[in-house]
Length: 171
View 1 (cartoon, rainbow, N blue to C red):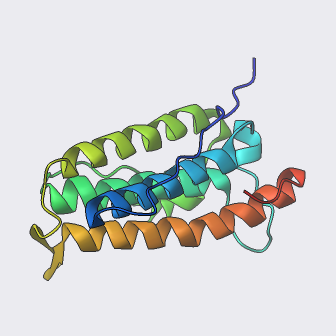
View 2: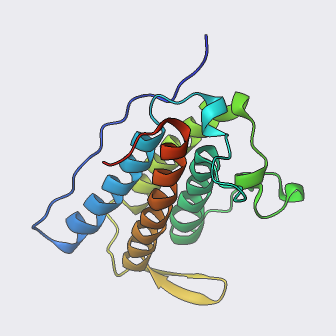
């Protein structure tokens, strides 16, 4: 039996309300949109480079966003010291380049888990709480805005990759 990425329900954030609810809602929207772009695809399809000469793939985006979630929320904001997610000997772009369709179910599950752990790390914290990363002071508010921008940029990539795979467009 061939694994396929599960169906994903895209969440919608509040269009009114407080800052925290708005930021968390838009971040949840973009997270679920990436998962939705991958829904129904096999590991082989997720790992396919469809927009040559770019090395971007949907599986690479899944792996990259898992790494980014971990870096900004758990390592940065929560201050945890964690092992690198991907083999450092494979280079800083291993999330995009060291792909295996057979590992797609694990990579997908890792993103879902990193999202859960990121939300757990930020739960109950003030958006004004700060941390220092590589000599620069950041607030949790800035992390939310950065992650929304990161997902939004990569959702554009995911749109093109998915369209080239099977013609799916939109939403």
